[in-house]
Image (tube, helix red, strand yellow):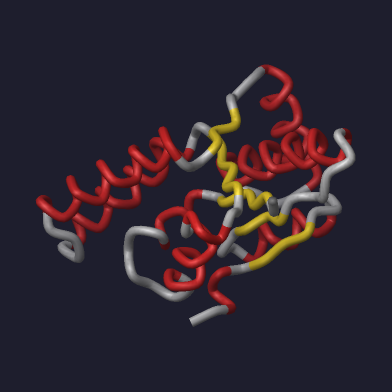
Length: 154
């Protein structure tokens, strides 16, 4: 079963139509058989992104509640959440010293590296890191991850 790590910008695409949404929805469909990992931090980042759209007037409050509830249900049933541990924070700090990343992007990258290390250590295929931010993708490549950008798909 292929394993993907999705940062919050990618997870939003599952719920809000934008470039790459159809591609990510297909990737997360149950019949696709993929495992999706993300940082526990995504629980608040995605809700924040939905709220920003409400404030900007591009998402109605009733639609917000539907999207929020669907996202949180997927976090319980579908996505595997990487816990934020002291070791993960240490790795995040190290990534911030090596790459020009925002804090939360570095935490997502550290989470993906953690999961990838577990996969490779158990003789399984490496994960594929999904992000829509080129700076984050570049850092992930430098750190040795396979990457894909949903913005490359319509």
